[in-house]
Image (cartoon, rainbow, N blue to C red; front, side, top):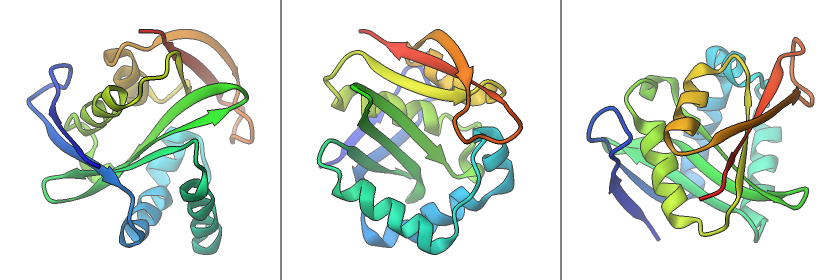
Length: 165
């Protein structure tokens, strides 16, 4: 199942395609999560290959998860995921740095929100990750709180955001 959408809230008419994650996407997604700047922004340490592959095998087995590869300009630009966590439905995404600032994250999250019917939706983002905060707010999420980042480096607080509509 795929979704193609031009998103009005993106800075330009950005076209992304969401589709199911395939095994041949995983090497690209692995490299995305190894980027030191992306790790700093997400306040998340990169996983080694075996740990990454085991984590993704678990994600792909999770029947509550909605997991999509983001295609942009003919290639894999990242992923967008929604899952059940502590009785809430969360959303998250990871975009390869070469696609930052192009509206890809906003377009992909917006397309994902069109696919997800459950509300409310929750997101957690490192407080210093201004780009992701902007993406979430453009897509209608409101800030609801702040807490320490579980397992995060440098005691960076995590913002909690929620989409009710």
